[in-house]
Length: 298
Image 1: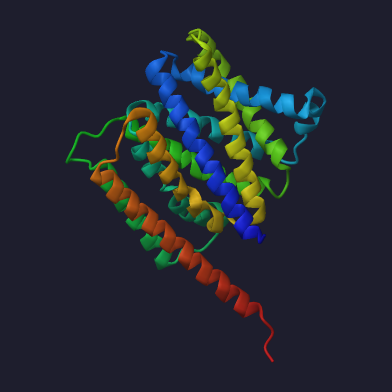
Image 2: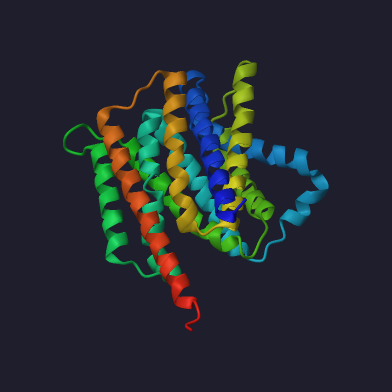
């Protein structure tokens, strides 16, 4: 199987797990009375326990050995931030609305690649980013309908996630996937613990405990697959397949909560997806032209 196809399949599986993660978190917040801080902490703690169970306690010290501690701590902080803001957003917004904001990620990654990675941005990429922001305006509709403050949380989650993707790409060159994954859950578990313990509410029933455990499995599995995906292909080729999450998110939102996306959310999502697909099209053209330039001339 070609490396790019492997990366695409890994990304599609990862975002499906993330859709299930958001659905589980929203269900817990709405139906169990468990505070968001506790859900965030147990999501990281559950992931840590699963990792220990799979790899064994003896493997943990080796996973703390990194070639770039500052970059690992930066990624871990971004992972914690995107989780917190995302769980706040899904509490108040429909899942199709939060995922529409998430779809800005490939465009923001393309924009941030200029100052952070030193990449050049042409007018094609700039136009795609601008159209993507127009799609977000269609979803949010400021001035036409009341804008819920949770949209700010969704946007901050997306921004943190975009930065996380760029940092993850750099870390794939210096550390293993397991080291990067382990640092994320350790920092998240430690940082979120004081807030969760101070607001602690004991879960009631086997179903609540099962969902809380599932958070760690779904989140850890998704992030591990994404880390692996970026080992097989560049960011620009893989990130647009985040759009596959729309199918999973709409399906789970309808099955679990009975939510149906309104026409504005659907239209805005289509605009964002179209701009992202155009962006990947331009990236492929640029990649093909660079390869042709490297070919020897007879």
